[in-house]
Image 1: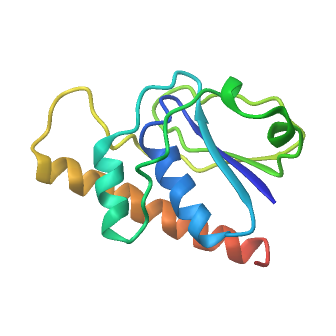
Image 2: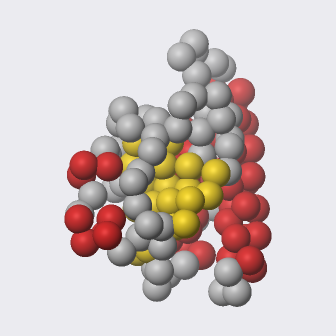
Image 3: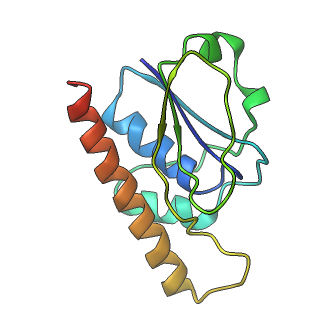
Length: 138
């Protein structure tokens, strides 16, 4: 099984989803990408470390950075955008949309507030992935 998680910057939501999905689906190929990649958000790394998942080696990437072999064989493309225009991937893969507000903000927040936003996003994505795993019979 091949799954691609997408959001705009590929810095928070899709990175969280990639890390959690790799743990839940160890036999699957899991990637994430964005239409306008930025850089991996350090709060995403922190909240994933809290649950024992290291995403520090992951990095923000564009769809163009993904291998053609991966893209051709995709089973699912899951977009996580809520308030932005989600990236579009032309593919025969089944497309799912799990809208989540971006936990990263342009304006600085107190660290405790930012971490709480990232934890809530992480936990919501993890719950949605558990449901997805049941839905596909895994």
